[in-house]
Structures are given as C-alpha cells and as structure tokens.
Length: 254
Image (cartoon, one colour):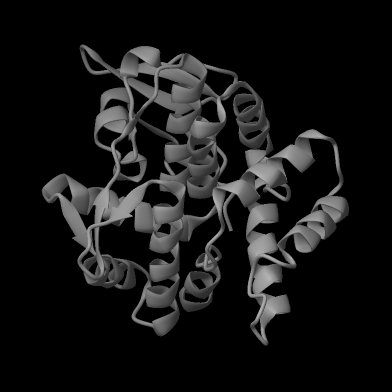
C-alpha cells in the first residue's frame, strides 16, 4: 500500500509555465467549466508544448492535468483554500501571482512540497544547491526509483522558469532568487495555511511556521501579518508563544 501511494504522489512530473497557470486561473474566474477549461488549455498548448514529439499528445495532457488538479479539480477539503487563492490572485499584481501558485501547488501536490522542503533546508545551510543533492534527499524520502529523480529534475527546471531558482553557470548547481517579501495579512495567513496543509499538520507554533518552514523558502514572511480567518484560529502555547490551528482539521490529500 505504501509503495503504491508513493508512486501516486509524484503527480507534478511535468514542467508548467507561470503563464499557463495564470491562463488556467483566468478561465476559472470567468466561470468556465472543467471541460471548457481543459479543452481551452489543450488548444492553447497545441503549438507550444512537445510540438515535434511523437508523444506530444500525452505530454500536453499531463501538463493540462497538473493545471486542472492544482486549480480546477481540487479536493473538497481544499475548496475554501482554493477559493481564497482565487480572490488573492485577482487582487495581486501579475509579478506576485507566483506566490498563490506556489501556495496551491504545495497544498495540492505532496511531491512538490517534499522537493521544496529539501531545497529550503539545503539553502539554509549553503548558498547553492546541487541537483544530485536534491535528488538524493527526495529519493530517500520517497524511495529509490528513476521516476523520482527525473520528476525532481523537471520540477527544479520549472522553478527556474518561475523565478524561484536560477542557474549558476555550473551544470546542475542552482541558487535561490531573492525572497519575495509578503506584507499582506490575507496573503500571509493563506500561505501559512498552505504550509500546514502541505505538512499534514493540524497546528504549529506561529513563529516556527513563519521563520522555520523550509517549503516557504522563496518568501519572507512576518508573524505580525497573520490574522485568523474562518479556517484558522490562534491559541496560546506556553507563557508567551502563540500557535495557529485549523478550526476543523481535515487531511484531504490522497
């Protein structure tokens, strides 16, 4: 059972561009159905992805499935989280859309969160990360098999396109781009909620979540911007420490 579960967890095994994610959300905000969005994305990618590949149809469908699962066909337990993400997307400038895409991806795709966790941990210890280091750590977590290493490599290339990481000029060595500072109350609370979902945790100390969550390595957050919402509330942990917890915890990931 665990082996089958691990194989299903990769999910995010095909690079997707930020512009494709933006287009997916725009279609969703226009009220289009799942089928309409799927068809529109397949048509849009017909001359952009795997144009000269014999497997072009399969590659496009994989990319579209990632886009749909991330924003359109989310688990019921994450629907409220997704809906608030849509509101944030509408109100954020285009250059900040990556923040909500990152929050959705780590909440929906366990593999995405696992890779982000290990990259974040490595970047705390050193200025650059090597693909081999990342692949080794992810394989230790998910099992030694070729699919994991290949998917990890594709995801890192995806993050370079997103402006999260950058090439250093040395093959297989990457550095982090400058962190994006998160100032808004709603966006801060939403991102922290995404981190809790990704970690499959019902609660966590606020300071720890803000300052020591490796999956949030692309962003600089402040606990002063956290505000409770209909899904999250605060609680006292010890004499002076504050924690945040789900009002009703649901582990909705498959």
